[in-house]
Image 1 (cartoon, rainbow, N blue to C red):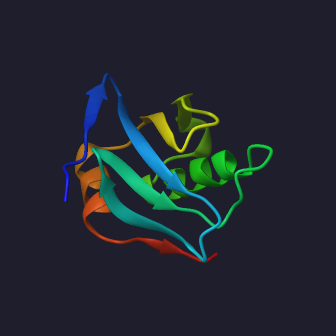
Image 2: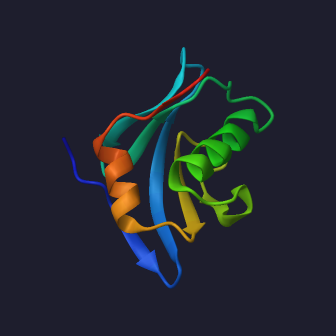
Length: 103
């Protein structure tokens, strides 16, 4: 298993997410090549997966959706996010243990 590559930048965390859309349920699957791997029920159509991912990350990290910014990779499976108000220990705990949300 690889290690999560995340950094603090002021009051925000910056990290990558590897997305697996159209899954049977939304869940954190662990770490893949330094990125948080997340399965989403949403399809990668018209920004649906990006919106679902932002909502998923906000809930999982205990922040508002407005605090989650997609910085890079809008149409890619690997994306970079900036999350204001999230803590590195909470992100690492999220990466270490599966978290599932209803799909």
